[in-house]
Image 1 (cartoon, rainbow, N blue to C red):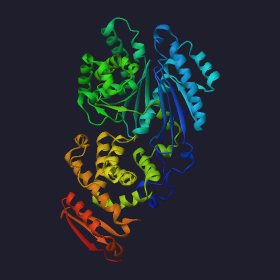
Image 2: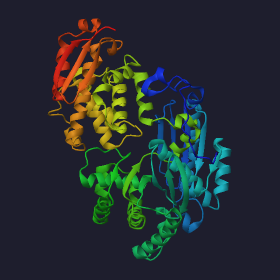
Image 3: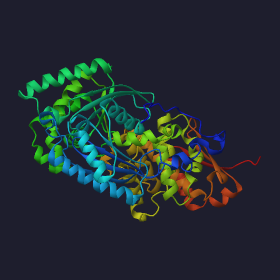
Length: 524
């Protein structure tokens, strides 16, 4: 594999940026991007074996197929030095199935990667040969530094601006990697996986001393500076899901879920005395995964104590997504994953693909001075505004909200999800009162709720004002000092500005707490 993980931002507009406006030239039909259709990855880990097939050339991964088997390949490895016999049989059975599935799906490329268990076991090489002989799959065994790099690239796929320390826990190892400016820096592999810690004798005090010593040595190499930590791995995701349970958190999407060090410590204290069997049932966690949670909690407690992070974010993207990122051309890596995913959704699901850009340009005068992060949410909303049109009219608002808040989208934190969902809700519905989604609204401050409503009602007006391009019918101007919303109509726009359009324009002005004014646009 290419050891260079840099992804320089290249100009992919070929001198035609003006033609494509704020979204840039589409990359879906670029040969190097189309080559990513049906990319298959298998991750043979110490605890699980998972196959993922990514579909399409979007910058944000679309999961065409996703299957996991909890094999426990590395169980007892620290004690015996060999792969677990039952785990080997289960892993081999899974790989046979995955090989046949890949052929049936015509997946190419199809990459199979093995991590700590296979690389450390004395019978690891023999298992590689057996896999090749019986399945035809070449098992690429990577070292700890490469595992850390690929996991960190997976985080960068979802968070292009990520800066801090990636912490990826598996069954037998835990990798740390520093990331910043789209690059992977210093990496360290440690023996802090739960299977390995099961072999430490002497109880919790001995384990704590061992974890502390290993982490302190890793910290000297990584040099933490109050960084944000990005957690990758199934055991971390279970702990985050349990943190949500303790907090009665309303949005159970793990990707980009954020915890404070203090809040996480409260959860770890709570879990130390909680009924894990009952929690397993409430959260849908497998018995095999929950068995490792207490040891993962011990490691996470020391991570917070030793590395002193500013915040802790959960990433659902890891080594598998890192392998996809590896195959992306540099100019695709440089794109915004949220905007690219929204564009692909519009292309495949909207009634009039391409209208989202025109709608954004029509509404842009209403949002002068907003932050760049807010502007990208506005762009995404305009692209997605018509992608649930096939839903029953009574449920379109809810379908929009659910799609935005629960879809697998990169580059979108939880407040961003709710803002986008609320804007799309108001695209189809004037009022949010009595909505079953109300508990999620508390993730936004009142100011953001108000702006999401304005955006939604602006899209509600603009989307029906004209069929081809609302700019051909009129122009919006916002005069904040006078608090006037002005619509300048063309001759065509006068005919299009019927009763429904008038009502929606008035509703938008009311949401903006503005006076609505309509005038004829002077002909040039």
